[in-house]
Length: 300
Image (cartoon, rainbow, N blue to C red; front, side):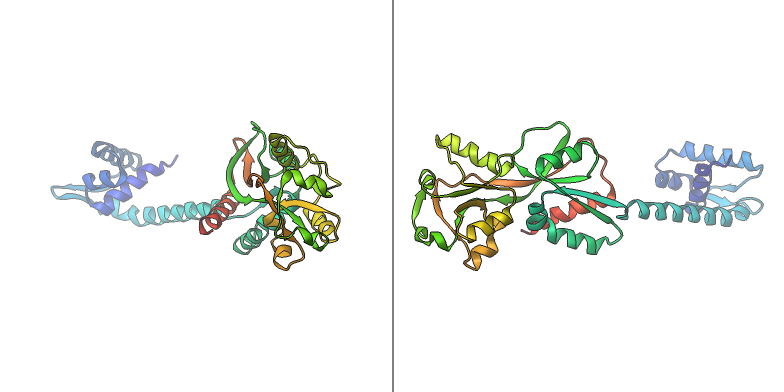
């Protein structure tokens, strides 16, 4: 069986012309280099070098004959290793991303478009679901990376790695409640008006209810909805006052369809977090996606 390491030592000694220099380049001892040359010479049945006072010289009967073929073979092997390395470091295959529809729309859309432009060979599978369901997808190998509304309870099946977006919950209203513009309100005073909130199983609603309990108040919604888009539509149509992250309604606030109420105290900040399955082994495609997200956050 061919011992490639012996030929690598032979090639390095031939290039360096010295056992000592070859040992330094190969990060092994000089006796180990000398032993490898002797072993290869014994295996081939011929002397490969002339041992000179100034160093090592290829022998005409052995070393000079085999050196060109050894050099060519090692170069081919090196090319193979480089091609394999390129394949390992090329984003291919399928990347499964889990998140809610809102997170995809307001947090990930631009980044997904940018990622696709950089790595068009990666098939993107976007799995739209609530944060609790996304956690289950992560734990049961149904998605590779998930984006969750925080805070959530600790879960041994996932690993939260980063925050990708901060959320500022605010109260909004439409023209039907224009008499509240510029007026300072307490959260308790909101009980006087029809209130639109997300459904009880949503993390945003749980955070809202928890904050109200800390204040010793209970706000009962007139309408419960399951999407931010529907909430904005109903608020704009005068159904009541809504509670929504400012980041999800900037366009409506900017064009004047909705306005932000001045309510004290302010609701606590929330965030969107990035999560991976516990003990996952990320592919290069996934690493490239995470790296893109990290660079985006650094530029903010």
